[in-house]
Image (cartoon, rainbow, N blue to C red):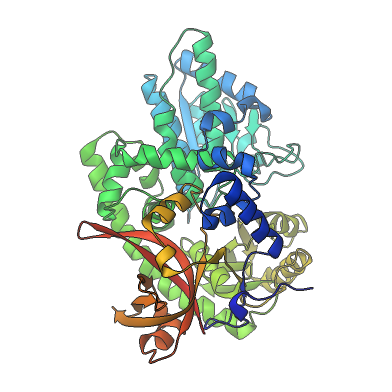
Length: 581
């Protein structure tokens, strides 16, 4: 029997069905409230995450020391750490080959900062997205091997058999998290929780977390020799940034990494992140939203449309003037990236809609689309259609594309399968994101095959995503204390969405702000009123319906947050959906 819709909302203003907690979950939340004396709304959130009353206290205060895995539980971690420390002790020449995204830049910065604290410099190499593409390539690896004793590949390298074989004369270590193939490249060590011979227990780690675990093991071995290693806790801001920006699931140790990393970032000790926060006009303590939507895109901008190493250099620098200049340049590039993205997004969405968006996969391909924005546009297509999406930029008969997935659909494995079948020149990634290179003539066949594989996983089974709600609140119950308690169940992000609540049958007063946003106040007639904001409301049906409500009452749904303005902090609802009451 299908679950009954919440507040009887079968089709909201955005066309979604509202689903609340199942009856059994509601009973468990009541029981937890009685056992723990925590608010019912918080108990509902904990129950949704499978937390028992006995584990509630430890979940709300996650300790990194309790959740940190043994680095040696990952295959090849011992040999990788041994070789890395040997290079440090011998003062060998070390090169770091990193991917050009936030995870790659953060991974590289972790190593650069750690090595600098040990009095050791290293060469940073990040390939150009357009000229070299993703991951190690033969000419770069040959050149690095000729001038270095050790090459550490971070956030890349797991599928780079030929380039790693070309690094004659140097040892190569791979610290990665992308899905591995049946055969590993000829590196000295490949540390990757997504190797096929791993058990998957740490598959949620991003590359920066893998690098951090190697440094944890390195520090442990240094202690055994009576040497004090660099302060790793102070580096968790970089791990947090990479985890959120790479959309890694905020579960297990990732949750502790991000939570502790946000505290470190709030101290504003890292010169580069401080400069970046200032150009992004961050005037509040950092949050996962800030990492994912303010800092992350700016760090990424260099790799997308500018100089590939700008982000890593910013994250690693100790020089105030250099940090300010790099942050300013990245901010400018991010503005340019948004303009390029807007044009590609409009064309891709029109093409996808013309092709049809009710199948298991939506895709678009266009001549001259900048390869630096196709991933962002794929994410926008995915969000608009609730389907896995692929966007491909074409040049001289070759397409370079990025893909983004929806929850529960392993896109990386499907792309790798299509590549193994010869329909792609190359392709790989992880569950939620992948990249591919393809001959233009093969695109329709390859996309049909990819769609077929994704359909087997359940992609495309529904229309607009159901809106899952954690419960019902009255405006008077949405207090600052409740919001702060809900935050203790965070941080929220991938695989751990922020709780959403509904407010039933409220009267609305609204006004338009700017071109497309809406600010409103609502109440249930019992005295208390609550503010809300709906960004982009006039890009869809919410703005027109709520702007002039007359005497119509609405059910509202969204996420609670604290809004600080003019020195005052108030609770507001980040409105996501509404329905006629």
